[in-house]
Image 1 (cartoon, rainbow, N blue to C red):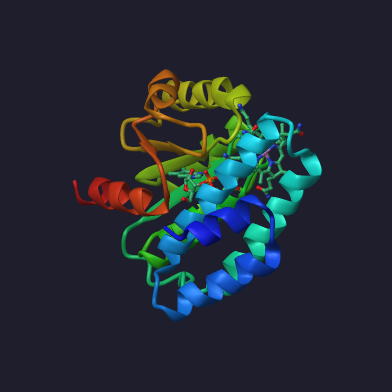
Image 2: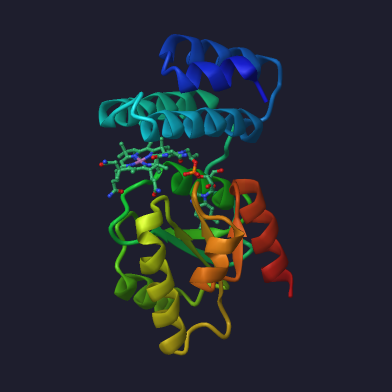
Length: 207
Ligand code: B12
């Protein structure tokens, strides 16, 4: 990881962030490794927000800097040939965070999955409709707010009650979702980053 990139992202120093992303790219560092450092910087932004050193305006600013940096990174190929089946994903209702979900979308597309992105603040009914329509092997639910853990749990329960869980694995992800939260929500797997997501999904597709 790049200490300079982590720190400049945490300090919201856009010029240095962009300069460092360019430098890392020129050194041949992979898009996913650059994103890892940016994600680490975002965690520090989150901590400063919790500690009231940063406020909502800084959170908004962090999203802008991250998006600028992602555009520079490029290299995360857009949709390739979809040979691995369908992956449905969305951010759970009451949650509008979408940076991580969008990265997962791009990486999954470039790894041969047809991604149906339902967007943010997605109600349970929309997940259920999409599962009926697209019959995905894997469904992904993004959740960045601990206050939304119960929404994810309820959504997964509703998918199961609708008889749609037998052929579908459910992956959850997003900063605060750890293994204990995944167990509470009764998800099949918790994915910590986009590469994990690809690895798990490929395994599910193979079985
Ligand atoms: C940027 C940001 C925002 C931006 C979001 C902009 C956007 N377009 O997404 C804005 C300003 C809108 C925002 C708003 C709020 N936020 Co906010 N936000 C963040 C911040 C700083 C970074 C999130 C981020 O983008 N990280 C970078 C990405 C790349 O990482 P990621 O999302 O974790 O994704 C990776 C993995 O988790 C995984 N992944 C993610 N999703 C999925 C899904 C699947 C299916 C899979 C498999 C994998 C996967 O892969 C990704 C790539 O590796 C976090 C801090 C943090 N630690 O996360 C707080 C944070 C999530 N926010 C927080 C809060 C409190 C809020 C607000 C309530 C603030 C307020 N008072 O209004 C609102 C809520 C709005 C709402 N209803 O959703 C808290 C949540 C605390 C908690 N206990 O729940 C955090 C943790 C900050 C903190 N420490 O206090 N926020």
